[in-house]
Image (cartoon, rainbow, N blue to C red):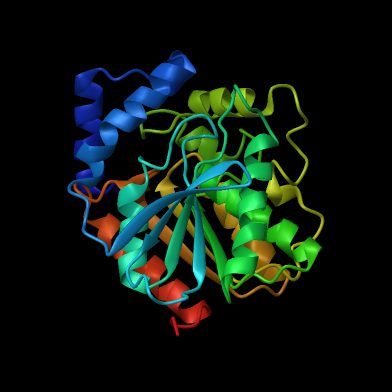
Length: 300
């Protein structure tokens, strides 16, 4: 379908501002641009009962609680940003929103970033927090957007292999494979925000020479997906990652995993964080909350 009109307006304004592609920037500048754009894209942060920062196994986390006195299930959130950018701050709006909508304890993970800390540092950090969460809550789910969706899918595979039960995995336009030659990479290579060259830049910084075809980097290449947690996979039509997200959803279905696909036609990568700009962000967040409510028990 045609590009969403609000998304088209956003892209046009970005072009008019002359904001350079991520692939043209050093990591520090790419991080600054993402941080600077967060408040504009999300808007005013909604109030929530309690937000607190902690450190688990050396990893910073931020915990969002709508009902602090309840031992609610935990939703682990892994932020996007290509494993190079993003932080606890860039996804504060999403985490507050989901915590308020669901009553879950949303735990945002400040994992180490590449290129200073290349693969598998981010996986190791997120896995350490998952092991902590499994001791802290009656149920745990994993979630993330873009590179965070990649990490969430990797954790779901690792949890299955370790015999650690997970209630659900929420994969928002996830990076699932190192392959940059899919039809959606060709079709959406430039002009829709996230470019093919930028994804190559992210992968190069993240892998730092490591093998990108191993499942901890490219979960689409896992030998079997049988037995992983029920999933919602959200994919955007005007996104280089569109095909690999849908391919992962197909593999989950073939493996007998309960799967919900949210095919966001006309939409661009990163839209969930554009709550102040794109109306579709609100409906997508509602869909995510409904999925989580379906697979996690209400707080006691």
